[in-house]
Length: 340
Figure 1: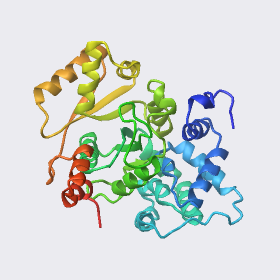
Figure 2: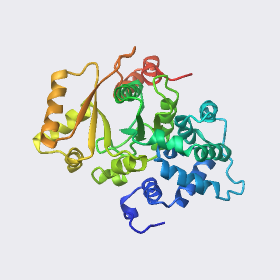
Figure 3: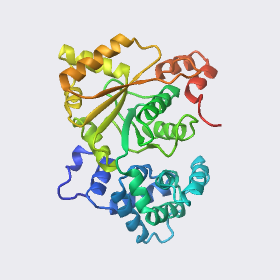
Figure 4: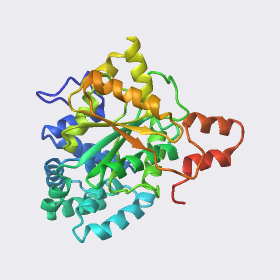
């Protein structure tokens, strides 16, 4: 399916094509995608990040769609409990809970309930959503661990109540030719850990099925721009670890950086948020921040990592522990803050 004025499909992933069409006011592809997701027991997380005009347009289209009772889905997952919890507050008109409902809906009836609430309280949701800041957090999550969730929690604490986080998983990575688990497996595990973390407000953190490392991700900041545009954020807010900043600035200084890295920091709408981990050298990090700020004029906010009662976590360390048979320690790093 193609639409006039949209990028060539060969340059975009199917998920990006869907969002591009949605952003242009074409709701049919999104309806079809959501139906497919519900049939597969998946949830349409992207709906919980949409700016209100797009979400209202989708809800109105969903209301008039003849589903012929063909979308059953499953209400037996952990998301069903989350849906019920959020629904109890959504029916009181809480706009944050109303907008969050879609990402926990696994059945047609649940999504219909979410969309009807959205239409009933569209003005309240619009006021809540307008001017929200959406920080984008991308990772391979192979596996996702406490360090990732602490990064999100720390960042949202600094950004304040008007901020939310948009999380997505890399399908490919230029420095990692293979992963321990498939993209679908990493997505499912990542999403479950985000939504069951005691550190995070589930109404403010949403994982979307937009694979990183492919499609528009290979065209400068186009994937980031698309996600910012559908959420309504005027800035491209990019959350990274200090190690990523160090890697990119070192490569740029040496003149060996990928074109994408230079384009990212040259983007006028970019605002970088950099996590300073507890073991990071302050002077080294500040030197990197000063370099990109002075060379590119990009605003950089350093986020102090909140303390946590666990050894510093990394995906590589977790794999080492599992290879040594030290699964209890690995589990602690991966699942420390998740609800049983």
